[in-house]
Length: 239
Figure 1 (cartoon, rainbow, N blue to C red):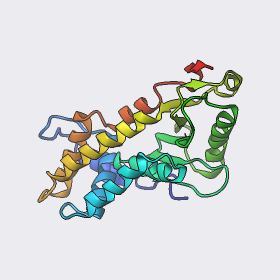
Figure 2 (figure 1 turned 45 degrees about the vertical axis):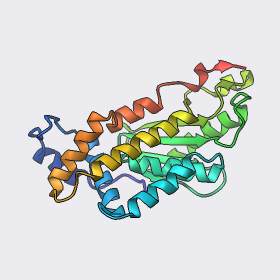
Figure 3 (figure 1 turned 90 degrees about the vertical axis):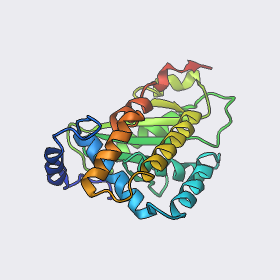
Figure 4 (figure 1 turned 30 degrees about the vertical axis):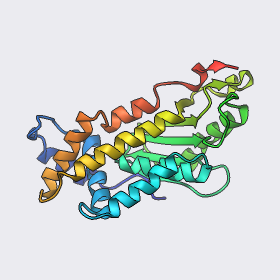
C-alpha cells in the first residue's frame, strides 16, 4: 500500500543534520516539519510555481470541500492532507475510511466524514461503529511501528451525539465540518504565499522557506494533528 512504512528515514536524517544550523528565520528544523516541507515542495513542483495550473487545481478542490456530496468532500479532505504535507490516500471499497493521512511513522489519521448528513440530529451509533472499524482496518492493512499513533476523526455538520451512541464513541475524535473548511482556506493561503516566494531558490532554501511558513502560520504538522484531535467525540453534548 502507498502509505506503508517509508524507507526514506536515512535521507531525512541526513537532511535534518544538514539543516541543524538555524535558517535565516531562526527556526530550527525537526524531522516532521522537514518531511512535510519536502512533500509540500514536491506538491508545488507538480502543480508549477508559475502558470495557471496551480490555481485551477486548488479552485477545483476548494469547490469540492464546500460540497455536501460524500465523494466530493472526501476527495477534497484527502487533498487537504497533501496541502499540509501529509501522505494521503482515499481507499476504495466498502467499509473503508473516507480519507487517511500519514506523516512518517509518527501519526496515522483516519477520517470518517459525514458531509451529507443534516445538522439537526446527533451523531449516530452506526457512525461510531463504522469509525471504530476503521482503526481495525488500518491495523490490518498498514505497516507501522509500535510508536505510531492512530487517531480516528469523525467529521460532521452535527454538534451533538445520540445518547445511545455514547458507549460506542470511546477513543474517537470529533471535528466540526466548518473547521475543516476553515483549515482548507488556511492551507490554501499558505501555499499561495509560499509559491510566490519559491522562484529561483535552491532545494535547501526552498525547504527552509516552507518550514518557516508552516511554523509562522501555525501549520506545523504536529499542530495540525493537535488541532484535529482537540475534542473527543464522547465529549459532545448528548441528544
